[in-house]
Length: 215
Image (cartoon, rainbow, N blue to C red; front, side, top):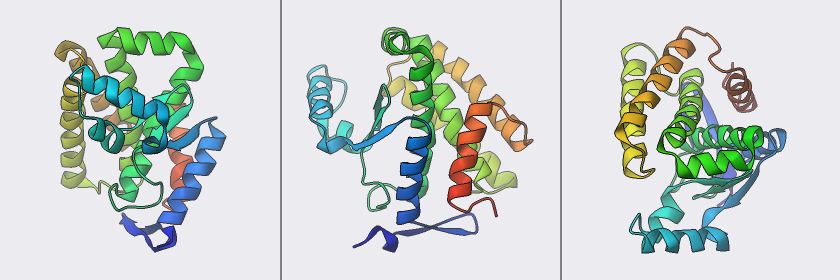
């Protein structure tokens, strides 16, 4: 089946798989990123087995549930534009999230990778900024609706993100509380149409425009 047959609605707009695939290509090119399927990567398979030996997670979970970005390469656990396992809107949130990590790498190079791996507080901060970028997409695209529905989606997302940081990213709970502040302040600013981060505002705007969600 062609990606053009994969269809979802985001807000009032119809989004097709081929649109998502093109958006990935154009946004990655704009921000100096590369997209690879995680299950096809020898490096990622090796990392998955290492995590299994460490007792962190199952290989299959690592390859099929989690996106991993190393330097400027984004390893996605799905076929871009195909929503059999990952909804198209979820794929778009992943793109925005991971492009923020690519920027973090370009800003700090190897120091970013060192701090991310070695320090729970730094890791929680970097992830909080990336989660905030994805949240901005979901709010501005209309995916999360408005009013009480929007507020509930924001709250659910914040709690889910915090739990994920503790369970899968091995961040200390105290560090995760700082991430809570990042996400809540981002949500308030985005809802009030204030630019919380110029870089994120621009890349989210590019995604929304490419998909026709700005109409």
